[in-house]
Length: 466
Image 1 (tube, rainbow, N blue to C red):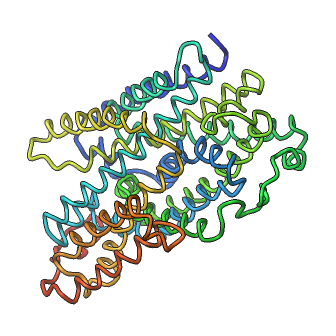
Image 2: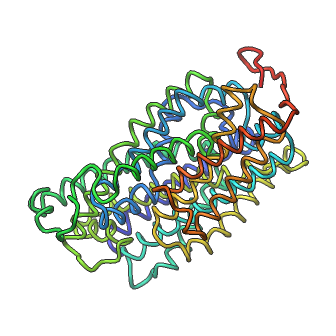
Image 3: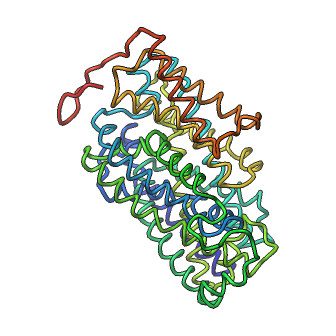
C-alpha cells in the first residue's frame, strides 16, 4: 500500500470515528441530528460554511477549468466567498430568528402547500447535482492513487459509501466537528502543495512561459472567462448562498442570530483563497502533463510531489468532498416532512439520505465538466432567492401564489436555456433567471389579490413575525 493511500485511509477512519463518537448526540432527537441542537458556535458555523463551499467544484473542478481559462477559474471560490458574506449580512440572522429549518417550510408558512412542494422538488434537483459531483472528484482521487485497483467508476462508488456512511451515522454534529479537521487539512495540503509545485516548476513566470499560446493571459484576473461570466458567477453564488438548503441548515444550527451572521462572514474569508491556489495547481499540471484529462489535473500534479506531502494533500481533497457531501446529504434529509413519531423521524431521515446518496451515483457517472454542471444546478436557486428577498424586505408585494409560480418559471427557464439556444441573448443563464423570476413575481403581485399569511412564532429571544 502506498504512503499516499495510507494517509487517505487513516483520514477516512478518523472521520468515521468522529461520527460514531457524536452518534449519541445525534440519536437524541431530529433537532440534534439535523441542526446540532441549534448550538453551533461562530467557529463551527464558519467551518461548516467553508466545508460546504470547498468541495469537488472548488478544488478538482477549479483546477480542471483552469486548464482552459487560466487562474480566473479561482473566481468560483471568490464568488462563493462573496455569497457567504452577503448571506451573513442579509439573511443568516433572519433565518435563525425565524426558527425555520428549510426553504419549503418558509414557503408553506408564508404562502401555501404547493409552494412548499415545488420548492422541495427544485432543491432536491440542486442537492442531487452537487452531491454527484463530489463522487466524481472522489473517484478521480482514488483512481489516481491506485489505478490498478480503482477505476474512475469504482472510485466514485467507494466515495459514495464513505460520504453516505459518515452522514447517516453522525448528522450535523459529525459534519461540524469533521469540518474543523477537514478545513485545516485542506489549507495545509493545498497551500504546501502549491508552494512545492510552483518551486518545482521554476516559479509562476516559468509556468506562464511554458503554457500554450492563447488569445488571453493565463494569469489575468479575468482570463478566458470575461467580466460578464465572473459577475454571473458572483450572482449565482449570492443566490445559492441565500437559499440553498445547506446554508439555511447551517444558519438554523447557530446558537443565535448574531453567531449565524459572524460565522458566515468568517466562513467567506476562509473560502476565498482556496480556488486560486487550486487554479495554480491546474496550470502547473497543464505544463507537466499537456495531454492529461482535465478532471485528473489536480490529483495528478499532487502525485508528482513526495509521498507524505501528496498524501496529505490528497487527503485534503478527499476532505473537501466529504465536507460538502455530508452537508448536502443532510440537507436532502431535512427537506422531508413525514407525519411520524420523533423516533421514526430519525429513521426516515437516515433512509432518505441513504437513498438520495445512492441515486446521485447515476448522475455522477454521466457528469461532464464539474464547474459547468455545478453552475447550471445552482442557477435554479434564483427563484428561491427572489421569493425570499421579497418576503423579508418587500412583503407588501407578496401574494399567496408568488412562491409557486415564480419557482415554476425558474424551472421552465432553466430547461429552455438548455434546449433552446436561440434565447441565449445574455452571457450566462443566471442573468436570464433573475430577469424572468423578478418579472414573474411582480406580475403575480398585480394579478393575484390574495396576500401572504402572517404567522406569529415564539423564539428563544423574542416574539417575531414570520
